[in-house]
Length: 218
Image 1 (cartoon, rainbow, N blue to C red):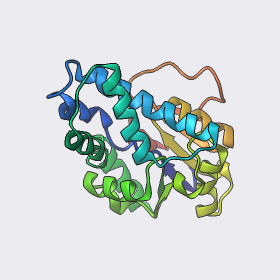
Image 2 (cartoon, rainbow, N blue to C red):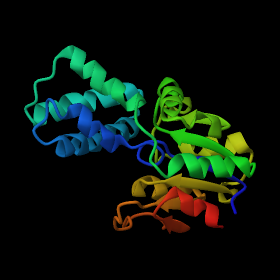
Image 3 (tube, rainbow, N blue to C red):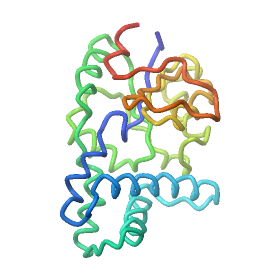
Image 4 (cartoon, rainbow, N blue to C red):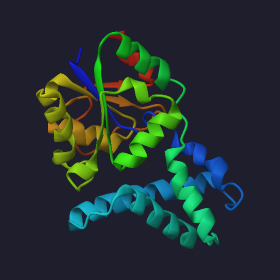
């Protein structure tokens, strides 16, 4: 078993598809709206890192929302734009997350969140989701001003735990994130809840699971 765990946040511990209910009043197809918003959010994080022009994740999320609205011809008042962007800090925990985290914590497992989110957003999101007590720290890419899958991001966890990468279990539902952590040398658990195909670039995860509860099985 890993000596410690680092967890991705968005999509892994908290469910951003819940945003569909928030955008339903303005979007004809809420699922398509949220999917595009998420895709643009990630695309802009990659772009900002490659251009070495860091913008924090709150700003990237807001800009991704703007281009999503423009693409889908959705008129969004300024107040609604701010409310929707802020909704990323009010996401519910995935149903399998609280119990799995509580059990790991009860076993004395050291755990951190390692996320693209800003420090303020991470603190608020885990508190709102009811999982804040599980973690020893909330590690944000803001410390290195670059986004996953840059190696410097994953190094934040090795420095915090003072452990070699292979002794840390990295848990993510995002295939590209899992590949990035595996390339860095972490023991990766890909939480593939949707049965997505594996990524074609990057090393495979050490283990593919369908729910966080499978982390408890050894």
